[in-house]
Image 1: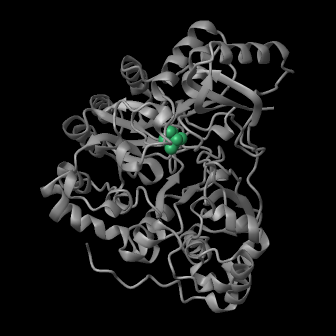
Image 2: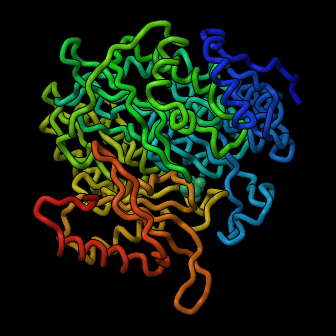
Image 3: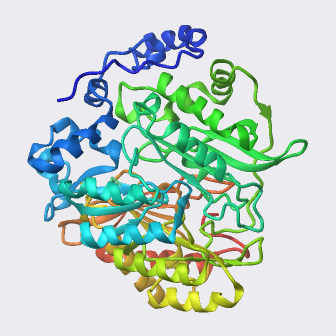
Length: 563
Ligand code: SF4
């Protein structure tokens, strides 16, 4: 085991002035574990292993010990804790049904293979990078490579012995798995059409790169209470799910100062979902990294560490409220007031995924396409890279809706690219079902899962396309394999939360609790859990078909499903 380092200390900037209030809070609550309130004693196993050794330090042990001595040599706290700081999770042992998920010990669920997440900040990829991702998939990951709804790519079946070589190849082309999981600053979502879209308010790419440079892999920010999700987008389509990130910078035009970002904090889903709140502050591009650092520092210093299920920033924001959060940010972390600013405007489109053929502001085109529920494979990614290289300038993007985009396509090359993508079953003009269905990893690989998701989502798309060939309304169907929210079920038109349900013959079978009417956008809200409405997996296509037919028959003119 590595030496125990000093406990990382909270920021020295500004803690004294707020310490009195947080101490009062801590006393009232019996102590939430906030560093700024003087709580440095670990209050749970996660805080303990983080105090014993920074998660980032596990890389040295992987490279010098575990990759040589194999899975059995991995220390338990590294295996189920610190390896996440480098994007590694053990995957679920095959053949364990969902009924045993909650009753087995973690070590009984652990396979000797890993999921490995590659962070793709802003969704920005080159064809060279995508070729490397595809090659790694085929050589080390049995061909797996899923596009996530946070613009990342995830492998499965990774052996610990291969991890150093995978890192070497990824890093040689400027990619990494640093802090892709764990209690860290995760991938920074960005508009996938930043810098090219005709309707862009401003391009946030510089801010994302600067935050990466300052914050990612920086041990001042590698021991957070829990994960910290961020988004920066200057697209009027609001294309990064800003409402459900810990911090979001959303493009707006200030009446006096011009384009900048509206600051949101405290969003997040999971089992206790909360929408982010506006602080009413306008942040120019040049100040985004500084404000980001202020918000993440508040989370590190004041965030709750006692209970894991209360440790996300959303709980602190809910307790403090927007006004107090902004005051602490300004007075204690930035040392200056922020300018007031406007809220984002209503987006013009319903879909936020950039699928289809769209003109760029330089006259070329970008082409967005939809795989099935984010599932691709290494061979397909390699073919996508070849198509992009042959039709564009070598730039691609992943989206926050499990889709991809090829940028910079001359007009006379668009039709050829579209034909090439469609031949790979990557739809440029998808049905609403292909376009709007997302699924999390599910029982195939996830240790928390209760039910299957990806294959079922793909089959559901086929069934709905067959049964409702002329349905042309935007509709989102999100499928989770457990009560967590990796596929954002609470903000889908039809959200399906995986659980065991009882069928007609009284047997426990895979199924879903139904949530209806969730939405993101300027009128966001969580879907209503339809009381008692649980559907077995076998009946899922029948149920969704019935809901959609009823909606189509009863809707008012112009009414969207979520309304
Ligand atoms: Fe796993 Fe549950 Fe997340 Fe799906 S929602 S990936 S089953 S934790």
